[in-house]
Length: 204
Image 1 (cartoon, one colour):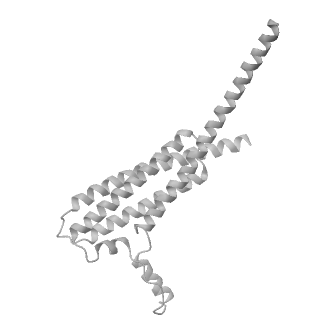
Image 2: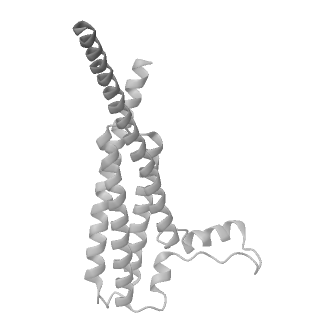
């Protein structure tokens, strides 16, 4: 009877160990998948925000070139897109323009930092999906375009009126730092993905 009890106990312990190992692996895979999904979601939200707020988009200069090359349409044609710098500086005083730029740059920094936090989580898993990498790089390009829009807007403000310029400059500096951090993360993600691809090729 004692031998039977011992055998049953060993089987129960063995079964528990097996379940534990499978569960641990499943948790790791599930966590990685969740982080990857969050990356694509957050990156898409950042790009949508930039487009909705008009931080990125076709400038009047590009539209003008297209008009010259292909000819302008009739009065029923779509209105020429207005760039961010044109929109925020139109009929606005310098101080108000600087405040708008500072506010938009701070918001862009906050959202990019949120995306950076997701990137850190993805890198922590040691697994980088190609779709995640592309999403993050796309958002980074959008951030860079947004920065150029903000900087262009500051250049359109009257040179002799710098009231509020320091506020905008500080916000742009913070945004530039966030972009630089994101650029380094993108490089690291690309390296991890390249290593994964190389290892997969060797084992296949």
